Image (tube, rainbow, N blue to C red; front, side, top):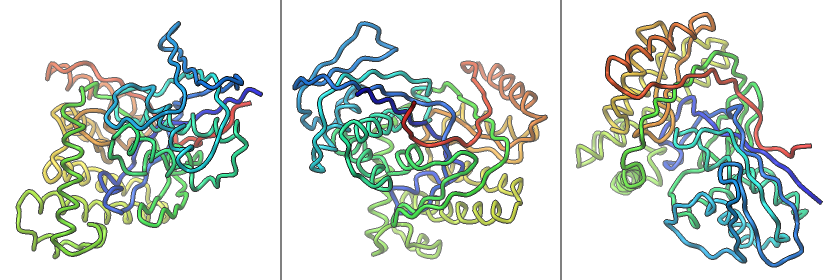
Amino acid sequence: MRVSASAPGRVNLIGEHTDYNAGFVLPFALPFRTTVTATPTGLDEWTVTSDWSPGGVTRFDRPQAAPGSASWVDYVRGVIWSLQEEGHEIPCADLHISSDVPVGSGLSSSAALECAVLTALVELGGLDIPTEDLPRIAQRAENDFVGVPCGIMDQSASILARAGHALLLDCRTLETEHIPFDATILVIDTKAPHRLVDGEYAQRRATCEAAARELLVPALRDADLSDVDRLSDPVMRRRARHVVSENARVLETVALLAAGRVHEIGPLMTDSHTSLKNDFEVTVPELDVAVAAALEAGAYGARMTGGGFGGCVIALVEPRDVAFVTESVESAFARSKFTPPHAFVAAPSAGAHLEK
């Protein structure tokens, strides 16, 4: 029995650094996907190969947790480990992986890999796991095995997303709502290398948790702006102000989309970027230049997407303006002597599924 499954990367329309604060996020799945083909071997070891490492083979038996490991294969090992920790047994298999999800661009290539492996192994093992539980199992692989303290947004988008919709996720209750979304989103991969992202990400999370403790609330999702003003440390106030205001922007965006006022979400996207730049301090010059150039060229709104410190910008544009906005960003990058960016239009796509 051979099983093949695929899962997408994602962009986040709005709601950045709110997921690990028990807040709201609004991602959608990209058309780019990672595909895993699993073939049982009858042996007591796993083998992993990939299109990007021809001839390279990784073999292992029962995975043991190894937080902090940096190899992409550890995301595969982590999913197997996570399933085993949940009490599920699956037959060892050959796993072959291919992907067109850009790596290192903040488009969640790691979650796409985890969720593709997970979807294939659930089918291979005949496991009866509710779909809504799968993001948590994939997140556990990344948090507890690989050692990356991510929230659950990326895995939820990769598993649960629907074509033509953004996914409203309440990161506390894990309740979801599929929000119809029909607009032109230009994704601009700035090619900016991620700078200090692991340590900075963990630091932002720790600061937010400390702010919640000082305010005596379970998470910053439970605070309002008047609470933020009571925080003792100015850096902590800025971080908390971003989270509180960003949660409000997510809910306002959903309300506007429900009312059919799609273009009016543009200023909220831009406000989100400004907050990420000034209060959360996770942008870099390439992200800021891309946003400014897109807005100057007529985008309704633009913002960085993902964890920051590099990666991508998204811009809400008219279809007729895609080429002009792209050229404007390219020209701005050339003037700044940045690496040329890569832009593409992304339509909300389907989440993980089995391939025929």
